[in-house]
Length: 110
Image (cartoon, rainbow, N blue to C red; front, top):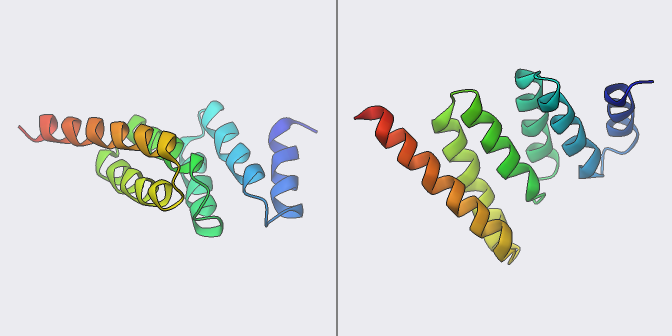
């Protein structure tokens, strides 16, 4: 069984564990299956809204897909989750990503 199939089985077998969903999203991203990756990150956030690492990677993917305004929303949600969890490192990374995405959006509109 390939890695993708293994991750899909793990998600089905362990729906309460966020890490297989995160791994599946990252595997889709690695394979260039960006739409599938984006959907997997959405499912991760729906099932595990407190799983902080998903927000930064989801936002990065959306930016790479040219969906900057969606990325801003994801970064904002992630920053709120990281701050609520007192995860200062993640909050700092998400804050930087948010600032960069906002600057890119402003540059694109001018």
